[in-house]
Amino acid sequence: MFPAERQKKIIDLLMIKKTAKITDLAKELQVSIDTLRRDLNLLTKQKKIEKVYGGVKLVESAFGESVIDERMVSSLKEKESIARLCSHYIQDGDCIFLDSGSTTYQIAKFIKSKKRLTIVTNSIPVALELMNSDVEVIMIGGKVRKTEKSVVTYEYLFNFNELNISKAFICASGITPQKGISDYNLEEAITRKKMIELSKEVYVAADHSKFGKDVTVSVSPLEHIDVIVTDQHLDKKYLEEFRGSGTEVVLAEG
Image (cartoon, rainbow, N blue to C red; front, side, top):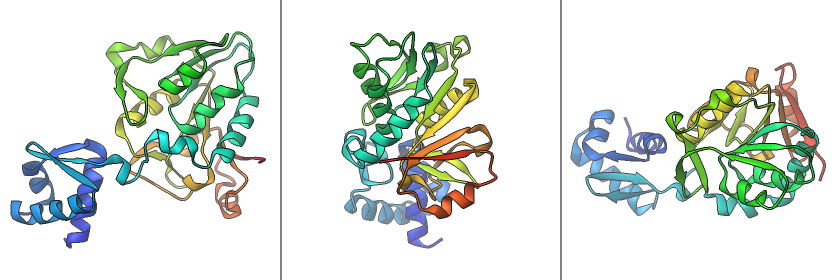
């Protein structure tokens, strides 16, 4: 295996595990400790990883997924248009899931006037946005993921099977017709998988930049996704690729 291949493998492993012992990485890659240290030193200089006691960890903001605060202000007009369209799918009396993410956060702004609405969410910004509205908010219990301002779930803290969710609005870091939707973080993906399983209808809210990417963790094949709502800047070739998939791709006007 060439050095560049090993270094990519190291990053891929850390995207899932977040931290790893040097001895475990050496065993996984089947290389000597000295060889591994050279790779780790280079990745550290590139500020993709940082060393911790006994191992290394990923610098999340340097590779792959940017932190939520950065995404809140990027492509804002596109995300607002997507959120506005998503709000039209939400009816009075619905119980819906709003995922953690910068696009689903925008949805919360457009649904405050809905009647008898219940929102289940793992997003702290979504919960805060709806705090002073008439919308009932159910916050999922678990561990707070600080970079994403989200809560990643633990089954023993939350009885998912008691929920009756009519619609789930899910974020994605990657979307392809072959692989469906994917994400960088395993814990976030587990939450999304569970909500997709429980919901009667599933909507993916994602801007055009997510298309054509298949990132670290698979979340769901297209067969479980009813509608993908994206912005009008989507390359039209993707509309052709998704035609016949059974998943509707809807473009939000600016």
